[in-house]
Image (tube, rainbow, N blue to C red; front, side, top):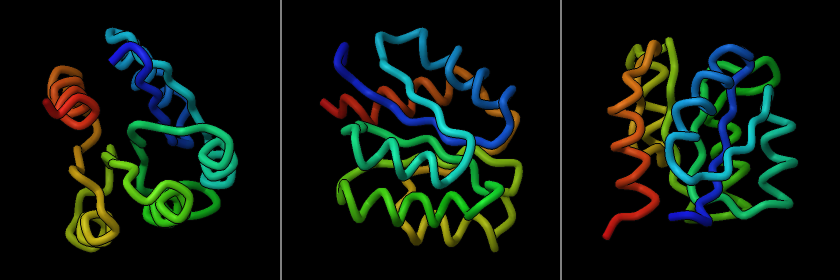
Length: 122
């Protein structure tokens, strides 16, 4: 787990920082992106064990990011953490392959438990 690399994508700086702070409780490397374009740039040059995505980004949706990232890394697991938890937002995220959709504000312990399960499923 010490070589685990995560990507956090959220246009809200405070949300990105909160997610990064929570995730740093583990020995993870955490990269962040403020929009979909930057997320896809990072995905093209880094190998991620998990992506944590906001649904609504300024340049595309988190679903678009996940689809683009999966074109590069087909088995990349993803969690959506979003304020938009209506069925019209959740369903496309799940259909695109998200393992879970968590509402904002997120529960830090639940997020860490889920991340641990996904990056170290043994």
